[in-house]
Each structure stands twice: as C-alpha cells, then as structure tokens.
Image (cartoon, rainbow, N blue to C red):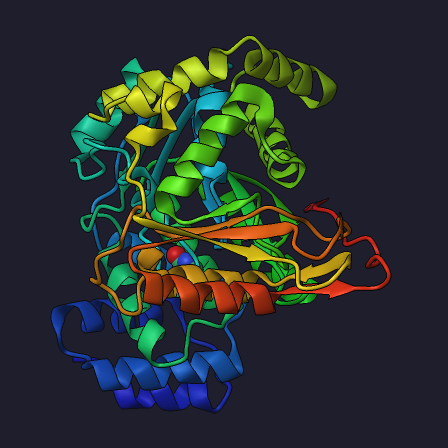
Length: 433
Ligand code: URA
C-alpha cells in the first residue's frame, strides 16, 4: 500500500508529485486503502499549494482511468460537448443543443444536477413531462446517431473517481482550486467521448468564479488538458452578475428556452448562445466559421428549424411536446406573487446570487445532494439593469408552492433589485478566450 501520509506531507510542503504518485492517490482512494480523511487532507494541501500542469494532467488521467470510456468513434463524426461552470438562469444548453444540431452538428452532453444556488440542466429537462435523462451509453450513442442531439445524466460508470472526489470537495471547502476544477471537468468530457468542448466560464456574483484571472486560469488548464488528449477546447467568459435571461427555475427556464428558439429570447441569453454556437460550428466538421457560421445559425433560428429540432429531441428522449405550443402544459406553481418598484428611478443591480438563493429556497434547487426539486417554482425577472421604472411597475414575479414561501422569496427578490436616481454604468460583455 502506498504511503498516503507521506504523499500528503509532500504536497503540504510544496513538493511535486510524479504521475505514479497521483495514480496511487486516486486508485488508493477508489479501492478504500486511502480513507476520506486522508483524501480531504491531500485536497486541502492542493488548494494551498496548487498542482503543476504536469500534475494536473496526471490527476486528470487517473480520474479518467478510474472508469469506462465511451467510444463515440462509431458515429464517424465528431461530437461537440458544452460545459458551463454554473450560473443562475443558465438555460443555454436547451437552446444551443437543438440550434447547432439543426445546422448538422452532433451535440452530445452528459450533465449534472443543480447544487446550491445554481441550477442543473438535468433538473430543468426533467420538468418536461416524460423526459428521460437516465440512459446507458448505448442509448446515448444511438440518439446521437439518429437525432444528432442528446443530453443525458452523468453516468456513474464514467470517471467515477471524479464523482467521489467531487462529493468530498463539496463538503470540505476544497472546490475552489483551478487544477482540481480543470482535471474534474475534463475527466468527464474525455470519458464521455467528446471530440470538442465549448466552455462557458461564468464570472460574477452569481458564479463560483469571481475574477478574470481565475476564469482565464481555469480555462487555460482545461485547454491544456484537451490539447494533450486531442480534444479541441474553445470558450468564453460570460457575465453572471445578474441572472441570465428572465427565468430562474426549472419549468420557467424550459418555457424561456422555447421563447428563445422562437426568436424571442432576451439579448443577454442570445449573445451567449450565439457565440457558443459559432464556436460549436467551428469545432465541428461543419466547415463553417465566423460570419458564415453566424449567418447559418440566424437562418436556422428564423426559419424554425432550431425549434423543430428541439421538438424532435424532446420526443426522442420521451418528453411530451405539448408544452412547445402550450406552455401551460409544463408544471405550474399554485401561487404567483408580484414584486413591484417601491420608487421611481433606474434599475441598478439585479443580484444573481440573491435571486438564485430565493429560487432555491422556493424549492427550485437543493440544499443538499439528493433533495427533490420542485419543477414549477422559481422567479421571473421582468426588468434589467438600466431600465427606467416608475413606482408600482412590475419588477419580477415569484412562482411558489405556498403563500408563505412566496412572500419570503418576494422579499428577497425585492431586496436583490436596486433602484437608483441615475442609470448604472454599462456592464461588461462576454469575452472569447
Ligand atoms: N464542476 C465540476 O464538474 N467539477 C468541479 O471541480 C467544479 C465544477
């Protein structure tokens, strides 16, 4: 058995591990030779001391090697995957996936459930009646081949070491480490057979990445890992100070994704979708880039092809498509409360973290892993920073399962939206990495 205490000490004192040592740490943890408390201590040493690029690559390798690796080569075409580091109101995948698939790109993604104040795509998709996200690798591959798009729950057979290490990091304050984050995210992408990944690195009050250095740092590590494994990694940093779009909450976000696919999406959401869609086309075998890619995307959206592909995708994964023409077919909250401006002025900040926490407390998210989410509840923000409002104007609506939870959320949302006498300075826009 490896000397785990010695390896912890080595990292604590700033030493550099060999690839063999990192493999021993991961395999020792997986077989039970290294208990949780030793892995936690090692992870904390990494948070303080970091990992070199070579160590990061070796950790990623060990995480991938801990499970199966999905072979998508039989499709004969590259599969494009997408990852977001997590935000509030982030329904990008539900718009991006059918949009790029309608342009001929094969889009496949294994996705997680939401934790904390940020939602997960799987929870959102499961608010569609009948939609199935649990499936084996064979079905995932089959849907990619026939429909060209599939979003499934993360398989526990792929990179299982990452799943167990992440669960430990979540409860030991060791999530915040660029090399651990990069190795973790890329282990799932590599194991699920992606040929290219487009990354949406979210930065701001509602994200766990708060500054540009951290965002660029984690992206360059993911790109480095991708390059070493022959996977193209492109990406953007996008703002997460305010919720993305208007809806925050599972079914509410599905309804907004349909609006976006009808060409009626809010500008901030569509800017992120369009940029990631161009990167997806450029990373695929579509043979288009820049303006030509953008023009095809605009055309697919305008002619309804992206919405049609969305319907095809939902049906293929077992969902009832009635909600596409009738949003009332999605789960509906029993109580809808309004939040109104208490004075006239200009909307300053719409605080993503506070809105996300309000939605979570309504039941749209989880306090701990395994909690059930309520598909119907959430918040719809009806204003954006810079809007001029008069006292009494509608700022937001709160969709709740009871008057009490609704009132608490409405108070929190009201406090999250500031109104000032002067308009705020323009916020920053997304940047390509
Ligand atoms: N998401 C992941 O999958 N892993 C991390 O380490 C952080 C966010």
